[in-house]
Length: 176
Image 1 (cartoon, rainbow, N blue to C red):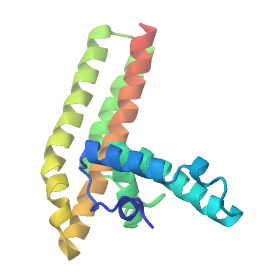
Image 2: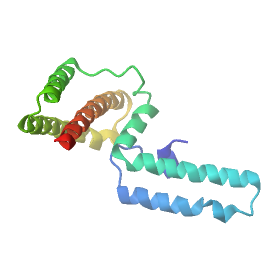
Image 3: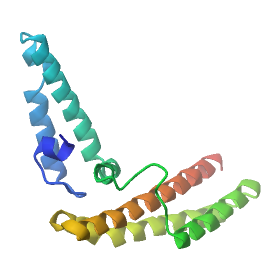
Image 4: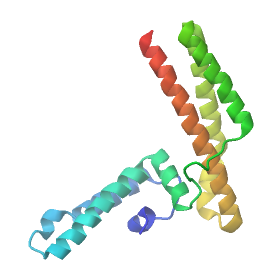
């Protein structure tokens, strides 16, 4: 049973965080192993599995990035070694990486700030561009849903790439 079925909620990239947390707490009480201490070993194992699934489901669904990764993997869209990014995006990233390499040899705080602003702007633009698709996703079906998943996958991969650049920028910032 997937995590959305387990929580009896529709699959969506955008969730009601309060409702999700309430469902988690409800199931945490319902499947708490201490309440089943006098049951058979088989029943105790079943409850332990349900309790573990509840914890894993909440951890995944409460984090927007993990939730996105989970949905994409559930639909077989996100596969190791088969995730390509558009060449224009990769060229932009190559330019940013070259600027980062230059900072390694010739540190410039202004340049660091400029690269940070550029990558933050790109991330914000990605987020703004994908939001309407994420909002419409629960209503999509068939080919339209498959196309949406491909578009969301591209967004997810781009965002991951930009997060790695921002992590590198953080390392530079901590050194200065």
